[in-house]
Image 1 (tube, helix red, strand yellow):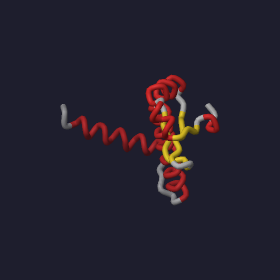
Image 2 (tube, rainbow, N blue to C red):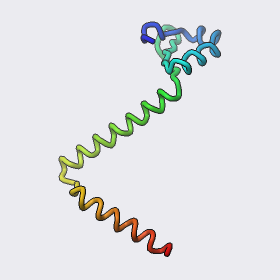
Image 3 (tube, rainbow, N blue to C red):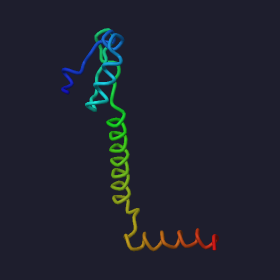
Image 4 (cartoon, helix red, strand yellow):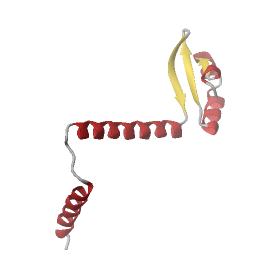
Length: 96
């Protein structure tokens, strides 16, 4: 759905809530709700919202990684895996 078609006033939401939820859920759409002529909220399919949050989290991780690389705060992959293996072994050593 195009955003130009997905803009509805709050009165439409009140009158058609069940229909809107079914449509948004079925089509994984997003709808913009206006109040007094201004866009105020977005009604979005939960799967789309979750995907957006996951994408934002990945972008944040990438941005932090780029910052750390620029600051020289990194180690070679082989060293990282060796350190990780040691930590796992130390954790499991207490279980034996």
